[in-house]
Length: 596
Image 1 (tube, rainbow, N blue to C red):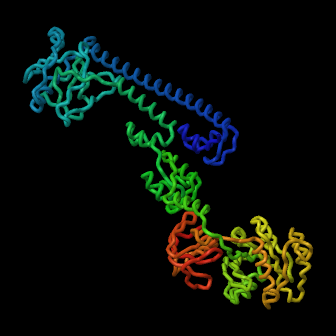
Image 2 (image 1 turned 135 degrees about the horizontal axis):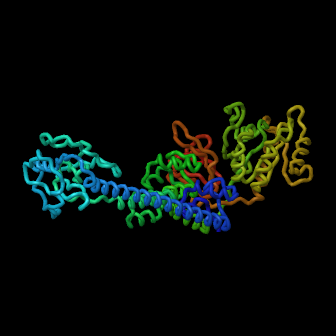
Image 3 (image 1 turned 90 degrees about the vertical axis):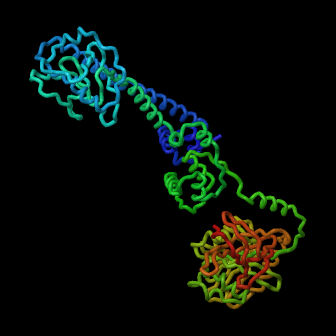
């Protein structure tokens, strides 16, 4: 079973664009994420992605762990060497008596701090008294018994006030500075931001910052733990880059089980949903959905209805799984259609639907004008029909529904649509001209629809008319008329003067009798929209040809993505109708939008 690119990307948790690049590297031409892949190619892609992902993760983890271990080792070594130098250098050298401001600083700051916590057990007195002291230093309070740096590791002071806590002013690896032999003056408190706060003195004692107390243990640095956390965070970020956008969005929303369950639940959506409906369902802004559509190569606005495959691809990009459900009312309509197909409604003969086709300016509308006793040609721009005219005409042989299609080359789609809903095709060819491209196109449309042809050779009253030349051209196009031994009915007419028009109508009715056309007027109406437009005064107006059943005022209808209720009906002359039976063209008002 084939799988699409975006489905494989969702399985591998990568972006569809990235997967397209990987598949292209394998030598396979993939145009977009909607392309289908066979089983062999899918297996190759899975193996390649697994190998690349395993190699990338192994390299990234090794690199991050190696960098973190090197940084932690250098930090620990420099800290140890610095503390050792500070503790050993004092007894090795015999400098002049240093400045001992520890007692003074502590005495001054005791006034602003709460009662001190129990101090740790002081070091032996012999080690303290062996240090030289200045004769001019007179303690003003209780003498501080701070242990030397060599006997007890220094720890950061306990913070008693957020405004008095300061960082140490030296970095690991800096050697302690000698304070010199200048005599001590009046004791003063160091400045809060001075660089000497927290530095070890030459005597081995560490100067404490404001807010600390002598003898209080400093907290140990957690350099190793911080580095391990950084390594884990780096590895997590690296692995996140290998995941798809869906996983990252789930991680941002939360990693709890509830969020994962919500993300795993498929969202119910109906086919042909608009961009606004899809955005509301996924709880995102419509602009985000439009931007994602542009990335997928879909031109959309907020009111555009999306196809089933487009909805699945867009929801997959946003990390949701689509579960398509049937629109409200569709099941009931299908059930009613099935009941109507097997209903016991009586069959009744219906009028034939005849489409008049031919090359431009060969007299199609003029022929209908003579049949309908109207002057439609005078109202057309340049004498060119620019729409499908649907008319119901009462003739001596019965009622006939005529569809007048454009003959200009720009209206190929209209001619094809007219041929699909007709029972017969009247091919009008000018006798003073020849078989033109649109004539051959009309023949091909009739053959594709499987409907019989009736050839009307027009303008036989014009000088230079040569009907045999037309018959020869038709035979070259694969249409052999009865006058030349074929099966296609041909009639020579003059639409302007009305010559042989009645004979043409008789041939049309005869062909309809051979077809034995019947319908069920008692069932719900079914038909085809011939054309639709937006009228400034009446709103959306659609020309509908009722093919079976009967359409009434107030009936609800569905046509593609549009729907509505019949507010008013009128025929081609503007007369209001209360109902329309089989083979009846009417203009219907009450649409939700222009049907396409």
